[in-house]
Length: 453
Image (cartoon, rainbow, N blue to C red; front, side, top):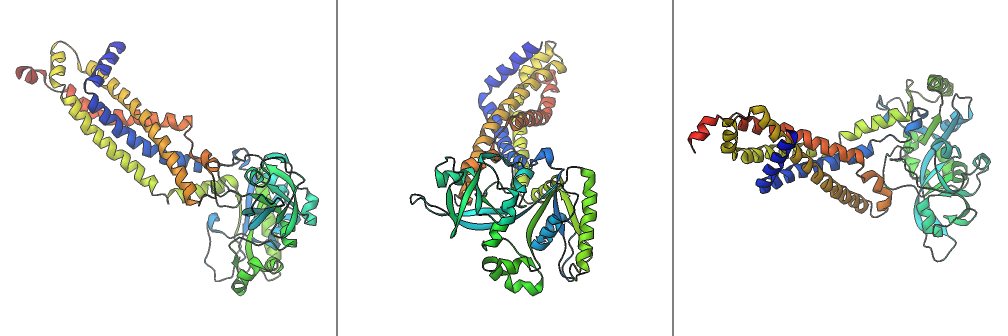
């Protein structure tokens, strides 16, 4: 019986092929836009370093003036001053490792006359950064802990910057210049798929860093700070000067620009770190700092990304437009199905008169709708692929071509999960919208149609 109903369903699809094409396109276009938006959201919401997202913690404490607005949610809390981050790293904390992150713009200049200098978005950090965040290396390795102390002139390049400067060859041991300072390449990163750049709280999929240098080297050579500086009122008029000219003044100030990460392998010890942070803040209060009520955050990477996803999800207009557009497409599909099925009233009445029951007819038309739903899902996947390719190129254009398609491909790929989701949504939604037209056609009184023939 199933094979017979399936043959009837295929025959019905071919009989009204233009209406079928119209319905498939209506569903496919709606699915295409919906899956395009959901695929981008799906990749944006992936958990970076999922295997250790509950072992890495972001450390924050509120050292602002008494009159500042209260902050109750972690994403809005300021960073740490350089001195606080350094003190917390050097103290007897429950963490197994610490790393700091702040940003700089530098000019990378190869010694070769054939390579033009270029501006590099650079992360200033320490050697623990690479092991804490499982950074893969193509050549070489991170600088060692002694270089963190000495401020050694070393640099780690990304795969992309290594290709620009050295043609992609093993550049470990080679020299280049940061601004006017000579440095030695100690490592080159391999492709690092972290979904989003979480370590600087930008959660960006574009504008990847092109180099990594040590905090001590940056301080020793007064490397420019490319950061927002949250300073106490008495320091705010000096921010511009400190940003470019006087790093020692910035380090000794009450300006917050350093992100501090701690690795705490035992989740239960996170509470011990909170106590450690409270004790540190209390010790600073005795020195006249941290005038506000205690407001610290020791937040796991998992919690941070979850909070960031919640905040970002409400700011994307496409996340509202795509479902509404899909609903409009489904409403159009109802009208097309009614037009298609109501042309079969005479045929259905004749079959009813010859003994076909409602269940048999419903099975046939449900199979027809399921086939149409699968076809709509396939068309939707094709349109979603084209939509994702288009959005990826829009992102490249918006970045003023500072990123490449290869940098963004992972965030705009249509994987098997999203393809399956597209087909399932298409079939289920098509069945739902098809229930009313099916109910109408199988409940037509046979006698009235037969008398009219």
